[in-house]
Image 1 (cartoon, rainbow, N blue to C red):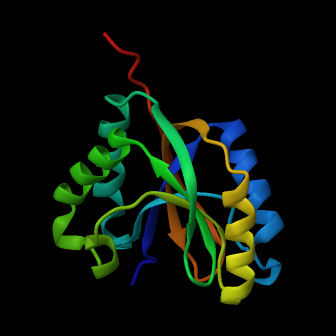
Image 2 (cartoon, one colour):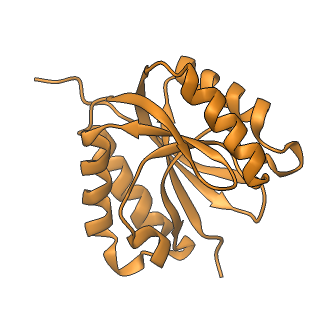
Length: 171
């Protein structure tokens, strides 16, 4: 059986560096296998990789970069995430979910709330402390989604399976 596939949004370099730094500061190092990311799908079937890649290639050609607003911290109980506002991202994800409906895991069938997790798997006290610290001086951050990244899930670290940059430049 093939490894499951994970689909994430590719962030612009500056935004990626901001959130990757926050993640490195606050994520438990022994559990931090991954760079900062916005997940669209957690478990797509690896045996459908060719079909998935073709769909992503076609979609990315007709998609312009997405304006992202990192609006506020969200308390996760055992961690903290930063909420992402972008109606175009939600629409793009809905379009893919409709295409891949028969493959979606229970987790991927839930309502989509885009976010970047910067801390997870800590005590609720530690998470609450970071959340309160971030909320007290949070300022909106704007960034861009520049494409989609498809990953093989290998149990810990992920391995890149494909990169699909948004190419549409407008009319």
